[in-house]
Image (tube, rainbow, N blue to C red; front, side):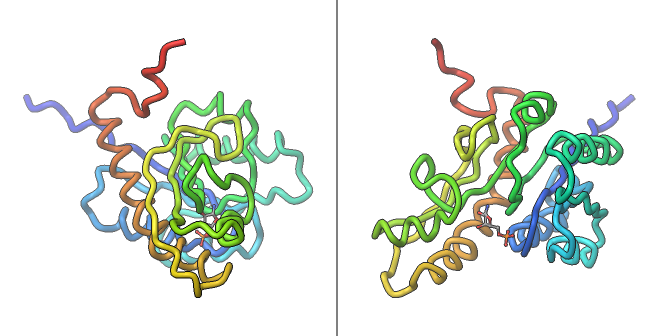
Length: 210
Ligand code: GRF
């Protein structure tokens, strides 16, 4: 008797706004060549465009507003929704909430985030503007594993572009998003799936000794 295929990992995307990375990720999940499923798209902000993109593409969506709720109350609701949809792994894509250390420690799967800079440089808000003001010649973005800090988790994949010098802050942010983020986030998910499939360490820090 042939063995039944193992179930494919189920992902959720969490975002707060425009959702352009979510659109790039959804296209990859829809390609039919990903050994994974996009089970749910969650937003914490009412009217976030990410929810429209997801529902137009036919994905299950949930609006779990963070406004007016404590962090733990909000995370409890998110957790219940993620469990209900049997989600294994989380992809943060423009999610303007910091996950509590308790949530990160308790989540049994992987949590990835994308940050518009070559970490560990330029963590935090307005990273593209920070790079512009610092006059860097090379800018970029990083997909990293989420840990209890802000933009501190081990990197999975990064990509870079040469700064032209005539883009301005907003132009550089657009170029990072469209020329780097939309390319590397789908690739990073494929890379993660390969590593999950192999069953080895997911990132180098697991090999570190004290
Ligand atoms: C991206 O630049 C991402 O790196 C940052 O927030 C932005 C979200 O953009 N965390 P979008 O909502 O995916 O268009």
